[in-house]
Length: 316
Image (cartoon, rainbow, N blue to C red; front, side):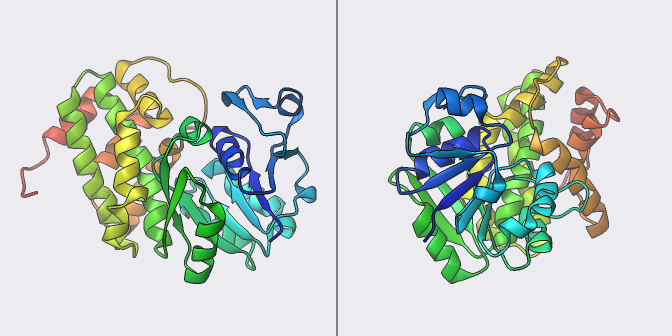
């Protein structure tokens, strides 16, 4: 074992680095580490959390010497980063922490990893979690998905901590789609609350949204039970019901007619990508299509809700 590297010093990447540093050598990479090195804190993304003295910080990918690398990068930046640094990354276990579908290729994170780094072992770390909870040592459970059962078990052991509990699966497709699609549903739930439609409407959107998640994921080869676990239903519950969810806040701003805050909103690109995939697959995903239409200014939030409510009545 040569250690763990976390690539990407956003809130989630920083939180993972902080908690994993309890177990052994960890290096955290970002393009600009000057402020974090001076403060020993990620004041912009994770204020109030002191970085352990033994957590190494670097802005040079070439210096990373780790056999397990966690890619805590936004989904829409992942493919470009992998292409730029394939030589350094290839041959290691690359664990994607991004949630979503690449807008350009329509692929999930492990497909991007395999295309750029064919000798790497791809895996996914996903599930219901907020960075601040992980960094503070609050109990959190996530899904570790790897198609190779032996490597999945090894990564589960390497990346579990006393407060971060990992459950493993070989269903990479299900884990990826659960983590990506729940962000779309969080935007829809936020729209409902922001527009004043109430908690009953949010519950309906979550439930019908979960049905859409199952419909698409199983059509693409996922196992239904994966979507019923942490990476699907668990993450859906968290992100649709908490103001700490960036996707939920984004949707709430749209629903209220106010300007959304800045920052990465993975569900926006995923909604557009999944709408295209659904059309190719001949699948009906009305909540996802509604979110994409609102994002592209084809519908207002009230019009989108009216369109959902006017759909033909049917059995559940």
